[in-house]
Length: 171
Image (cartoon, rainbow, N blue to C red; front, side):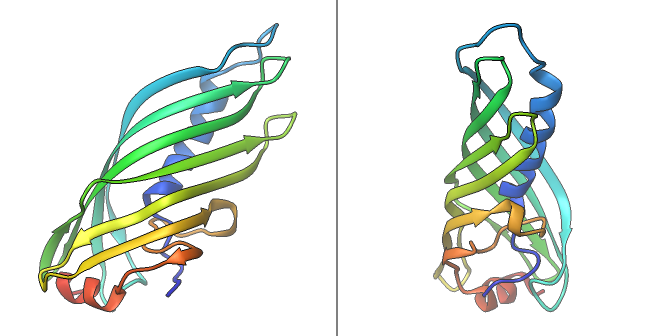
């Protein structure tokens, strides 16, 4: 099931990284070797609407390893991210905390620095529901084709049981 609110934390990472890339990596005089950074993104709480019958909030903790690649002019041409995310969802009838789940994000830029590709591959959510079932979604997300603030299921791949997820939150 695909809804307009399926973008999620992966989209937040892509947006933050794309924004930071321009601020942190000015044009350099010569080609640079790739750089590696480690940081943590704290997201939310954000209100999520349109996934369940009612609203709920989502908060995220996302440790990231970022590798930036440069062209011969020193411009960032690609950013690769490895993320391990843990989310907490709070609804009117319950709280769910995900298992840590992993994904890779690939951002590519044209010769003038415009973002031309933004994809993620991996898990988009992994959480044990109160009924003992596992809500797990995984696959490929194209950030340029989607606009929602949180990814509950990929555009290509497998989406967990959203009805059971919403029921567990009472949303």
